[in-house]
Amino acid sequence: MIYRSLLRPILFRLPPETIHELALHSLRFFLGSQTARKFITRRTTLSPFGRLERFGLTFANPVGLAAGFDKNGTTAQALAALGFGFIEVGSVTSHPQPGNPRPRLFRLPRDRALINRAGFNNCGAAQLAENIRRHRPECLLGVNIGKSRHIAIEDAIPDYLESFAAVYDIADYIAINVSSPNTPKLRELQRPEMLAELLKSLQQRNDELARRSSRQQRKPLLLKIAPDLSESEIESIVEVATRLQIAGLIATNTTVSRADLQTSPAEVGAYGEGGLSGAPLRHRSNEVIALIHRLTRGGLPIIGVGGVFTAEDAWGKICAGASLIQLYTGFIYEGPGVARRINEGLAEILKREGFGSLDEAVGCRVK
Ligand SMILES: Cc1cc2nc3c(=O)[nH]c(=O)nc-3n(C[C@H](O)[C@H](O)[C@H](O)COP(=O)(O)O)c2cc1C
Image 1 (cartoon, rainbow, N blue to C red):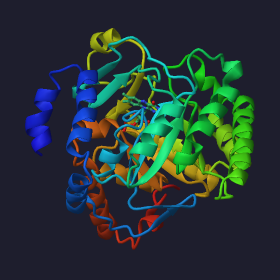
Image 2: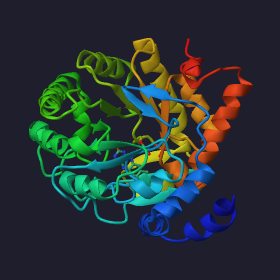
Image 3: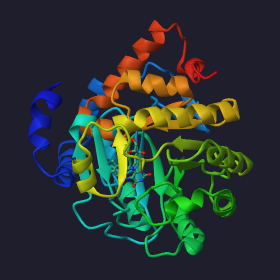
Image 4: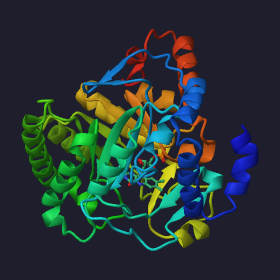
C-alpha cells in the first residue's frame, strides 16, 4: 500500500532504468545481512501450499521472479527474502555485453505495462555463476541463458553450450531463452528443426555434465517461448520439447504486438521497438498456457508468466494450466510485497473454490 500510494508516484518520475539500478542497490543494501533477511522472511513468507514438486524440485511456493530483473545474479539473495518461491536470473550470454543503447526501457502506466529493448545487457555467464556462488539465494534458482549478440544464429549452439556449462553447477534449473524480441533473429530458434538441434545438443551436454557431477541426474532444462506464435507453431514446439525431454515450458516472453493499448499510438510509436510486458500480455499468455496444457494433457509443467499483478491474475494462469507462475512487470507496479500478497491471496482462492491443493486446480478451466 505504502509503495503504491507514496513511493511509486515518486519513483515513476525518474527514468525507469535508473530506478531499476537503484532498486537493485537498495535491495542489496537493506537485505545484505542474514539478520535483515531473516527478519523480513519471517514476516512475509507464508507457504500454505505444502510441498510443490515440479520437475524433481520442491518449491516453497508457486510465485517466482521472472528473468530480466536480476540479469547478473547480484541480488537474488535479497530478492528471495521478499517471499518468492524461486528466482530466475539472467538472461546471461557466454560473452559479457552492454545491450542496446539507452533509453531502452519505457513505462506505459495507463496500460500497466512496460516496453523494453534491453538486448541482454549482462556480465556474462561465468561472472553470473561467480556472483551466485558468493550470494546464494535461500530459494530455488533458475538461470536463463540467451545467445550472445555478435554470434551468428547459425553458430548459436556452441554459444548456448558455453553458457550452459558455465552455470550448470549453480542452477537448480536452466531456462533456454529463444524468445526475446531484442536480439536479432533469436526467435528463429523456435523453428522446429533449429530448436530440435539446439535442445538435443544441450541435453547431450546435460548428460555429460551429470555423469561428471556427484548428482548423476540431468538438470531440468526449460524452454521459454514467445506469445507471438501461431497455434501450429506452438504445436511443433511442444512436439520437439516433449521428444527431447524438456522438463517444462515457460510461457511467455514479452510480445511485439501493440494491439488494444490505452496509451496513444503516437506515444507508443515514439518508444520504438521492443517487447511489451504487463497487463496487455495477460490474456494472450493465458491462451498459450491453455493450449500447451491441452496439447500435453497436463503432462508438461508450465511456468505461466505475463501480466500477473494480483492473486486473481495468478489464479487465472493456474486455471489455464500453469503449475508455477512468474512476474516481472507486476513487481515494478505493485512493489516489494507483491509475492507475499499473491501467495496469501492464492491460498484464500484455493479455499474459496474448494480445492484441497494447488495441484488439483492446475488446468481446471481448460476444456
Ligand atoms: C525490462 C525487462 C527485461 C527482461 N529481460 C528478460 C531477459 O533477459 N530474459 C527473459 O527470458 N525474459 C526477459 N524479460 C521478460 C520477462 O521475464 C517476462 O517473460 C515478461 O516480462 C512477461 O511477464 P510480466 O508481464 O510479468 O512482465 C524481460 C522483461 C522486462 C520488462
